[in-house]
Every structure is written in structure tokens, then in C-alpha cells.
Image (cartoon, rainbow, N blue to C red):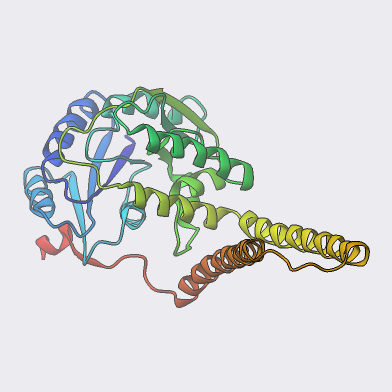
Length: 312
């Protein structure tokens, strides 16, 4: 009998976890599988860990990993994937925005459909602010054009993967992780399942616009060097424009004399060139900072407690 491991990164999800557990058990009880649910407590400030411990006491199929502090969702997913023992591994959110009802179809796709992964994407962004939805769509367009990562618009982290694909994902030991890009970069045959956006069952989203913006920049920096080429191209274009302007003013001075140049024009040119330089330095600095973090070889997460500690 196949085992499915369900990895659930959690940050302040004490209200959602019991409902998530009940729904997953209801769906998987109709499937001929063994099951383990791994809740990864990402340094939560509420009673997320206590709820995980209580669920473990009720059902040994529930496991948990608790971090020493908040390391982020990427670290939570990685810890869960590394701890998973199943033949197939699913990644889901605890807020039930990833419908457990899709698990049977996903399992069928990877076992009998010839796929290595069954992934999900939202067909709508109902409930999201329009500005956030607009920038999200723009991000998917940009990153697919400038990188080798195949990221489908509206793709969720919710997916069921074969052990072979999970091992491939874990073989990428980079510190700055962007799982959506990693899933696409490793390849493997993926079946996409579409569903309408579902509202959170409890609690509030932990993703602000600023956090999503930083996360999108992480993805672009992790899977593309195009911004470096863009800044180089901008510098080259500015040099050409400056040379043309120098020739123009030289000819003008020879023919019409050299009247005093306008001060506002000079200020605008200086600010324009200074802005381009700062943008270029900023882009190079971001890439350099990623290299700096990689060379430190710090652990991506630190575990404070697991269900194994209870047995001891």
C-alpha cells in the first residue's frame, strides 16, 4: 500500500489546523493508502504547536516539526519534504485554500496517469485586491520570459509529487529557495488541475503586498540573470545618448556660438544618470547579497522540537 506524506507549513494557524485535519482524514479515508500529515510550525506566536501536539496524541499519523524561530514558508516546505517518508509527497496550506478533495484525482494522475507530479492552479483570484492580482499576473509573465523556470500563472504550492521528483527537489541545496521555480526547473511530467479560488477557512493571510513583492524578487534573482543584462544595456544606451548630445552641442557651438546652458536641463540630466547608476548598483548588490548568503552555508532552518522528542 502506497504512503502519502502531506507537508503542511504553518504560521499562526491554530484555528485552521483542526478543520484541515478533519477534512484531510475524511477525504483520504476513501483512498487505499497509508497516510502521514507533517505540520511544520514555523515559529508561530499562537498555539499552533500545541494544536499539532494534541492532534499527534489523538492520531499517530500526525507528525510535527517546530522551528526555533520564524524561518519562512520556504524553510517549512523544505523541512517537511526532508522529513517525509511517503512514496508520494503533497504540499498543502492549512487554511483549506488548497482543497483536499483534489487529492484522489492527484493520486490517480501520478499512479496510473503516467505523471510524476499533479499540481494545481487557480483559475480566478476572487477575493484578492485588484492591484495585487495585477502585479501577480505581471510577475508570472516576466519570470517566464526571462528565466528557464516554467511557472504557470496562478500556480499554487499545492501539489502531489513522486518520490523521484521529491528527491530531485531536495538535491538542490541552495539557501535562497523559491520553490515554485524549483518545481518547474527540475522538470518531470506534470498534470495541472484547475480550480476556483477558495477563501480561507479561518484566520488572516500572512502575505502582505510587500512580502509578496520581496518574494517575487527572490524568484527573479534565483532563476534569472536578465536584470544584470538590462542594467548593462541601459548603461550602453545612456552612453550612446550622451555621445550624440555631445556631438550636437559641439556642432551647435561652432555654428551659433556657446550660449549659457539651461540649469534645469543640467539638473535633470544629472539626476537621470545618477538614478540609472543607483539602479545598476542596486541590482548588482542584490545578486551579490545572494552570493554572500550562499557562501555562509548557514542552515536553512533550525528544529527546536519534533514528535520524536515526546517519545523520549
